[in-house]
Length: 378
Image 1 (cartoon, one colour):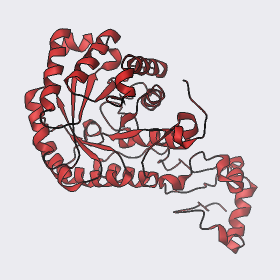
Image 2 (cartoon, rainbow, N blue to C red; image 1 turned 90 degrees about the vertical axis):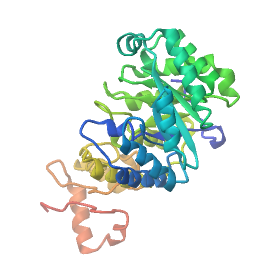
Image 3 (cartoon, rainbow, N blue to C red; image 1 turned 180 degrees about the vertical axis):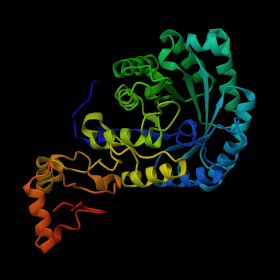
């Protein structure tokens, strides 16, 4: 909405990457990971360079509890986060599961929209505020780093949302996560909501005592856009999952948000600590262990992500890959065929392939990685 186009690196802000593949991602219908599988994914997420790994909801089942215990014992880089309701029992389970973690975070949530308060929780606004304060205060007796999420925050009355944020902050939460739990927001609305929260709490945020996060679902296909708009509005953390896994239509695709921030750092004035060349390897592992296939046209990762059939495109890529590839496939570790011969292909690719067969352009082979080209039909 209000980007700067300056290329001065010292003006860029760091965006922290919160991965919830092992918690919200596993809530995708039909997906179930055992503790060893979760640990395997967590170790790869550590190599990817995410800042926070939300390993599960330990009060909900024994496997999540054991998974968090294993992850806490074996990882030393990212903060390990346990998810729970703002209740004493959930908080105690989170604290036990994180006992051996080097960096610990408890992530508490409570629904705050009138719809959820009335229909689901049967609580008044004042009762909810009391639960938030008591829950966050109690969690602070176990760990220093508390994140609080007003569930359905995008549909929560703005004045009440301000009260919720103030209550959570006063109780000790230092990361406030604005959640578009059902993918309701449109991008401009997400921008305005985060901007207004940031303005209301500018003193706390500017002093470094509070930070804002966004957590967006994809029910109307806006999760990535909403996450990016939240970052433009002042959020310094976003939450997402590998392959966009999650409830219903899923969460913001972690890799797509990262790619936008990295590729268009000039626009967003941001940077992350992600090792982008690990993205494809991470996605392949998650796909294998969850059984969720990578769509053929999935940005960055699909079989067709950097595959060209049109003769005009093939000619351009042969001349300079940047003509039709805004993301270098190698930068995300993508593996696949770069060219496909079909009815739209032209003379340049066919001449190139014939010459390559004769060895004239053999020195270019290093550029094309994996299964570089399809030669059927020549």
